[in-house]
Image: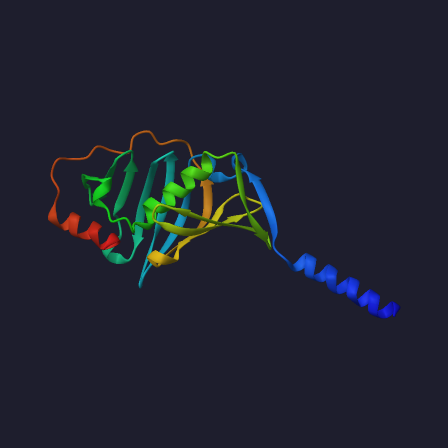
Length: 198
């Protein structure tokens, strides 16, 4: 009887420790609360894109693509209501509403900014990772944070077939000048940029 009782207690303890637990982290403890730069890998449907992602301020981001080869050197700068696309020294401004709603970058920026402006990050913690599930006007999303460092590990929206993975987070000083757009919109630049979202 004593052995049976001991076994039951140990089993219950194992089950309790193996379950996920609720976690809360102050948003100020996360790197998303300040300007940062990181490496990014975006898997969109059957394509994979790589590059650097930089947050300069709330709503102000830059994505510098390094792969695939057809997009190497393409930079998208998000600022307010406009997106400045640059490629090989040429740039033009595109209204944000012209980008398809399925844009993984726009959804990711929106979620990060909402978290950065909130007091706490709440989710479920397991094995040092905080899992956050939520929903915005574009659909459901899941976000994974490193519980110790406050870095973002991944962002996913399954209804869009999008998953983004991040590493090498580095705090940076705010970059005020994101460049000026020229009036021309070269056809080859427009075609290259559209490959990301269509």
